[in-house]
Length: 123
Image (cartoon, rainbow, N blue to C red; front, side, top):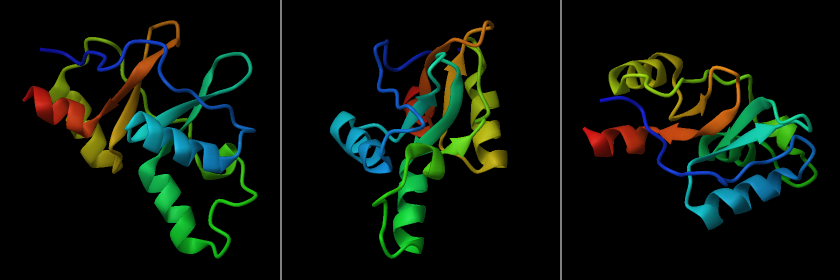
């Protein structure tokens, strides 16, 4: 068994300059736990998770107001390749304290995001 993509493209993607509130709306409307962030060239530059959103809301009186995605995202996230064993993905999540990992091709093309719940459901 290996990591497979739970959602086929087109999946939600954000740009660094978009309002952070858009990340929260996208997470809720798409029922996902995290959204990848790509620059104008299509390179993965970050990941915005529910945890990132909650951390900002809890620590900032104005919440997300006036912030861009690049100010709340996790930069340069750890990525997986297709075919990664689920055990490896789970171990990475545990040791790095993350609940979502982007999956990228060998060429670096974003293929999707795998969450802890995706891996647990398969187990």
